[in-house]
Image (tube, rainbow, N blue to C red; front, side, top):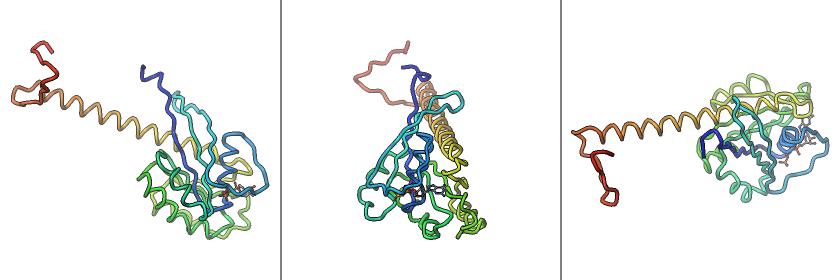
Length: 210
Ligand SMILES: Nc1nc2c(ncn2[C@@H]2O[C@H](COP(=O)(O)OP(=O)(O)OP(=O)(O)O)[C@@H](O)[C@H]2O)c(=O)[nH]1
């Protein structure tokens, strides 16, 4: 299959405390809707959306994990294979802000350092805020993460969050592919070098014309 024909699919996990707006964010992004009712996520759910990033088709699979600790055992298994992560806290919930470090650690423990973004949701409720701007910015700086203030309700900055992650992931993928190609070139150059003994397998006959 040609490289241009291959579709890139990215598994994105959206994590954070209960009621910060994870399910709403995924619904807004994939279905374009917002509902006021709060329905606690049990376990895990996922929705997907295709987007174009630099003319390349990318399929984002957004995994909605439960924010309640009681579901920890189920959700951890779903972090496996994640290629990008959204860490969410709410403007009106200080505990959700304080829990960000621990969410990051949980994801990192399962999948290592993947493209991640920090999101402060519900900025339409800024008059009720319990988090200072400087505090949120300092957290993003400390964790070395891109930071977005968003309102899923008002559809502010939701697309930007996922576009950024897709771009970051694709960039990383290209760098990896370039590095791998470089390794192949370096190795084949060495085989052509008469001073380099090379490694020859008996099951692969090698002739001067190869
Ligand atoms: N004002 C406001 N409310 C929001 C926003 N985003 C979500 N909500 C509301 O916040 C509540 C919780 O949203 P959910 O999306 O269910 O939260 P969750 O993080 O998925 O919660 P868990 O399933 O328990 O993990 C719902 O009543 C939403 O309507 C927002 O940007 N602004």
